Image (cartoon, rainbow, N blue to C red):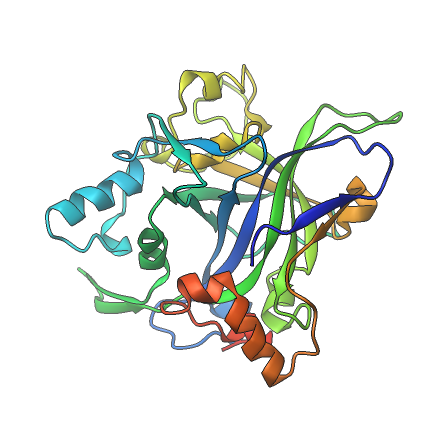
Length: 332
């Protein structure tokens, strides 16, 4: 459906758009389950970000293609192996550097949310941890990560990982925000989005996993090489963490966390991040209104079919992911 557009609704909102694109939400039922009927049946939640070119940002910097899971998949494919997700355990984080012109090649990030949901954007609670699982310029790599797969274990024999279910599709922005007024805080970054599908608003799975029709989250990136001492959670094993180039690692200084500025930090597998609930009303909070490219409908069967026909998610992932929750707003 495209990246949509943004409209500033206040004279001078202190926001700077750093990245724009499409956002897709998925969940996966637990192993060996045919269906999910509630959050207790969910094994994982994924966010897929697809940056699209802006006037002053056509080139993104990402990890080297021979690093991380991206590189391991390429080596498996070169050896004639499938390189399925169950074979990827213990992979190293992304490192090195490659420039990608996103007008010529797609760039896709697969983010795993640790709590299997988003934070409730209307409640200012604890941050939710997640990490970048895969960064790639190949659509098939994301499809492989979302598809159904059978694999063998030493203790439980043959097991089946069900296909992911599509949960939401919309447009997003990553922006730098400078708060004004007496309670002014240091510049920080937001991930804001607005759903285009499901067309009828948030359904049962969307509400249960806190995928609201629109939301704003503060984004903090965890320093993969933090200063010694102090507390904090461990997160990923050190070998799985991103190894940023010096100019990106320098964004942290001596801090344990830094804003996602530049967004290139998210182009490295093993990048750990925190999402912090900010608002479920982007316009009220930031003076910015996102507009998608899909028109709202009544949710009839005909409307669902029309929406499926113009959905980029359905076109890209509909052959490997169940799209019923996306189109109907209901569980399996």
